[in-house]
Length: 130
Figure (cartoon, rainbow, N blue to C red):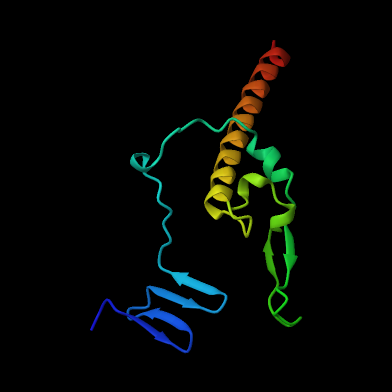
């Protein structure tokens, strides 16, 4: 049969391989965060500097306490050191949707800075050439 989940030795797997949930691992073809305007209220533009938020939170490499030194090191932020805007509501981990959205806004801010610098260089070139 297709479309069923199998639970075996603590691992949940979809029969077509589109979902795997095991100890410390979740794999899926796609993970989608609900984002429809129909499901939201009090929508406002985010005005804070995403670059400041990013620069305020250091990225670390680490091992989990149940891993030995031969395990591949992970890279990420430490929840207790992270800006509160990317910490989940339960204060138990990082809200990856918020983190991606802040990174998205940071790209927009950098693009705006890039545009402003290009514009300024063009203005200076006019001054130098005249």
